[in-house]
Amino acid sequence: MNSSTFLRDSAASESRVCAEACGLGRLGDRLAALVLRVGGDPPLIVASGGCAATLASHAKGEAHRVPLGRPLPYALGLALARPGRDVLVFLGDGEAAGPGLGHLLHAARRGDPIRALVVNNEVLGGAGGFPSAATPRGLSTEAAPQGSAARGVDLAALVLEAGAAWVGRETVTAGAALDALLAEFLRAPSFALLEVRAPCYPAVGRWNGHASPESMHEALEQRAIRDGGLVGRRDDDRFQAGRLWPSAGASSANHGRDRERR
Amino acid sequence: MRLLLGNEALALGAMDGGARFYAGHPLQASAEIDRALLHSLPERGGTAVLVEDEAAALAATLGAGAGGLLGVTATNAAGLAVAGPLLEHAVAARIPALLAVVGSPADPRAERAASASRVPRVETASQRELGPLRWCAPGGVPLPVYAPASAGECYALARAAAREAVARRGPVVLYVDHVIGHLREPVDEAVPDQVPDGAESFRVRDAVVLVVAVGIVARAATSAVRLARERGQRAGLFRPIRLWPFPEAALRDAASGVRRVIVAELNEGQLADTVRAAFAELDPRPIVEPLTGDEMLEPERIAAAIEEPA
Image (spheres, chains in turn yellow, green):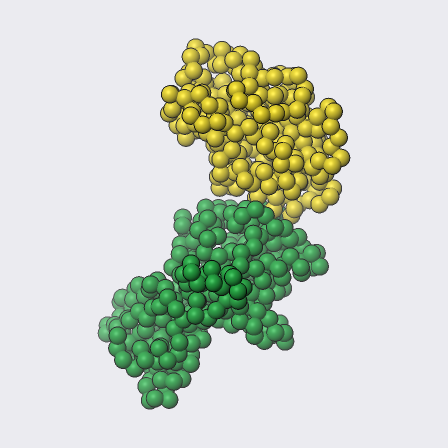
């Protein structure tokens, strides 16, 4: 396999996502480049709809687009039918924290032999800027400029607690730190979850006083905590970034299961 | 020859037809299918998993089908209600799969009573899934839906349906009403392979009254036709084996010379319009009379309807 058999043309893939600088296009290209570096058969990709699913267009490999909410259980069946292949699921926060949340927790609980990448833009961007279940309390969105009244779901914390073998979270602008975490994620024991915060400018940034995508990304970086500790409950809009599980001080021996067990 | 529940026979037929993957979320109505597949599939080199809900079960079944293992799952009316988008996807993506839908008992009180005793009762039978099954993949043409009326037919149709799912690269549905799924009857595994006929006719050649019924009601209607014949009435039975797409041409053949058609089903009347539509171009047209019920239609009641116009 070489780049011409796996990567689509970068400009073409950028054109598949909206041009408002959430960073999804770059994330897709970084991911595709890392998959190439890992070598072997490219992962089988499963996604449904929404912005995150456009990541599937960065790979020429086998991509399954399935009904909303169901990529994870579909991926379980696919992985069990083709045990020699890695299976990678792309989810948005709207799906992962909404109709797919039960599936996500059960995949983590069972140790399903799949890896899930959640692109969390904190909004139902494609649906018109409605708050998602992961929108932090008080954050304004296009369709709810008064601010979301409900607490946002902390996906990484829930999945960690459910028993995932590997959990990480980064911001899309974290550069080398994101690349390192992506590379680790692609080889992580399963079930693995990587949450990437990639805020949406037209549906969120603009409605929270940011004059540019850059200012929105800077504000998100201010919310990231990088002290390497375990996640705990937070009642503000800040979040732990980096590898969250296995944590530096914890043994993964009894937490999560490796895919060989299946 | 083995003595099996309809549900057990269905699971066996699916495996003999080539199903090698099962994902399920067990529900009381279909639990014997789940149990049989969980126990037997691994012994046959297959894979069986329990998942969190009905949608996950069907989604995983489709994922396996896309990955090259024919999958089977079983559910009830509630699972059917969330299956639509996934079945549409299976049609569009050409994924083979076998879906068994086991009918629920008639009303919630009856269901609770049956649940408490774990013994399904004939008097709580229902066929309220007949109509919804027609459009269970709402975006397309009706899926093939087979409705066995005995444990032996559960086996033979499941085996044939598994092969059909692979051959046509799409989902195929088996509909088993609550009673058929829980009748223990002899099952002949040596039954020859054949593409299932769309329908079965019983004593229709000189019939002037025709009963149309599926599943357990067709069993009662067979007795009713015998009763009516003993009383000198020229009655016959038409039983769709392939429920959807409805075997309209076979029905018109069976109804030639018939003056009244009684559509007997355990719901508010979901098949009557389809039967009427099949006769729309005929002149003269037989009169179509729904005979519905929320409790089992006993042979005597069907025989009475044959005797007396509604």
